Amino acid sequence: MNLNRNIAPPIRPFDEIGIIHPEHRVMKNGIPLHVIQAGTEDVVRLDLLIGGGLWHQSQPLQAMFANRMLREGSASFTSSQIAEKLDFYGSMLELSSSVNCGFITLYSLNKHFAHTLEVVADSLKHPLFPEKELQVVRHANKQNFLVNSTKVEVTSRRCFNRALFGSDHPLGRNVEADDYDRLTPDILRAFYEKHYHSGNCKVFVSGKVTPEIVLSIEEAFGNEPWGKVAQPSTMPAFQPRQTTIRRHFIEHPDAMQSSLKMGGFVIPQQHPDFLKTRVMTTLFGGYFGSRLMSNIREDKGYTYGIGAGIVTYPDTGLLVISTEAANEYMEAIISEVYAEMDKLHNDLVPQAELDMVRNYMLGDWCRSYEGPFSLSEAWIYVETGGLDEDFFTRSIEAIQSITREEIRTLAQRYLCKESLIEVVSGKKVS
Image (cartoon, rainbow, N blue to C red):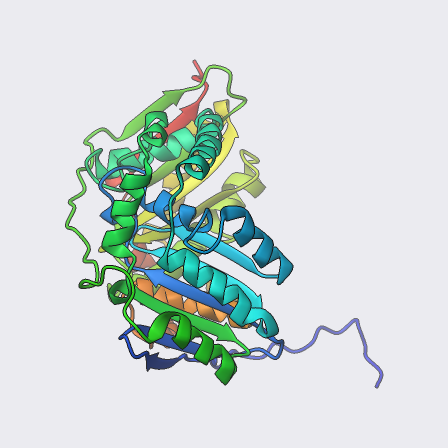
């Protein structure tokens, strides 16, 4: 077959994403098990979701460290034995914590899954929170915190969150260095005992999932209740207390460049406008060819990169615009951001520009959900966000159907200059 490489291949319209849906089961002790059968390699990803995160903690860092310390010693294994066994079997264990969940994620070869699951199960069900290991982990994290606290991006983000939510809100209550010193095994154990139990757990497994894999999961986590079983954790109610001050400045006299955070409250992801608003936000500042990048990077040369997007939290969302640039360009960048908002308020976007954004977003969807592990992340996003299983279908429909007129209406509705907080962290320019 002879190919003429001077002729571009035809562009084919995107029909549907065809995302694989999980098979939903319930194990004997009531834990939901979601099986995503995808992939051809003999490898799986296991995710255990615990309903307890930053939103539920009684003091800063409690949720993160309770999760992080699971690998530092259990009833049957020391921290070094846990690390050695996972390494020996070619497995990887990731521990993380979010606003409303703790995550235990295991990547394992199928042939070694039962052996690695034994280690993970003991770590989850019988952790020790040893004092010696806690001191090491606490010290390392505190040193990283002290280093990061000198960075303009970090100080601007901390100020931005506090300005929007207030210091009494979990999302506005910034971590301080002394918070690391207040962590004790008893404090971590108290959080663990309240939230880490079979009544507050969900399981996802993805990859080439065999009946033997499912049986191992059921034997490790699903046959009997474990932990101090109670009702699933609920989300406490917190009300943001946004400051009335619009402009905030954190001075770093020696900073070579400044960090800018702009933003404010918008709609949550359950709102009917959310999916199409995300398209509008992508056009505004969500990819390399966006309005903000084309103007502020390509045309003006003020920065290497600037972005805008919607960050979702329980019951709310934030429009966040972020960049770093030379100190002397900050005021000009802020002016250009508002100028681009005005253009979207007043003018219809060219059809070619909308088509480009549409094609970018559809292509990004295809890339994001082509593998078994990314599929797991997609469905965990749906689960933790309280979304329905039609979310991905509706997302595609929103991208395909949005019009130029809707882009302008949504910009007028949600790109509200008057309500945005501006935070600049860097060197003061006279």
